[in-house]
Length: 299
Image 1 (spheres, rainbow, N blue to C red):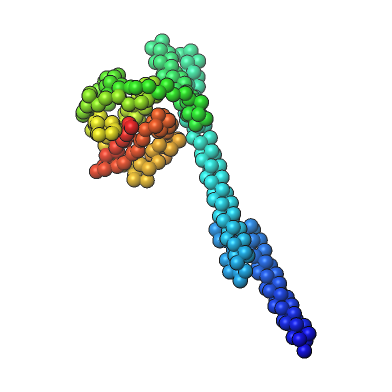
Image 2: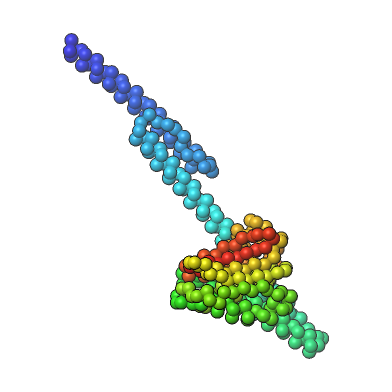
């Protein structure tokens, strides 16, 4: 009697085990089909199967996490690939514009019928275009060095107000030529911060040059001190600048001029952001009441 009960119990357990094995195999088969679909179809969906087995559910969760990370990696790769392609296209355009101009004027110089005054004029234009080309190549080189961490900073105590005043003074003629009368308010007792003098000069030069290329009205430059920080602000009229463009002005090669007139490569502010952050400070842009404001927080 007892023996029959034991045999019966074992048979029941065997049936349960076979049933569980069958169900597990079915779940594994469903998971395999799901995985195949995820691999073959570009989708963000993961495995959506709830298993009765706790360990199998844990496995499904881990597989879904791997799928998510893989999709994220694919997305980043596509973004990086698109950015590289766009960068190459922009570089080609930016280099070709002054180069084509130089070649055109060289061809004009070959004309024996042009006057000496015209020759002088063409040579002057060629020199300016060549300088523009040299500056552009230098910007490409600087950007690549900064991104490859090859640009060494000489961090020391620097006087931000003194550096800014000197840079503003160096642009006096440019302000006049662009009919700009900047409003300048600088706290000369703002103190010092840790930074690289040459990099800081380059930061201010890049920002002011960018303003000169796009300025359509008032220009304001402020430097003030709070309890913990020194704040510099560069404010200029930018009524046509879109909100989404403001968020992108520090991107490489970005320019709100979609036709890329040749006046702006989009490298200056990208270099500026890297130089600020490499010194341990913070830079951001915002648009308020039709004005573009570039803020730098010197910590």
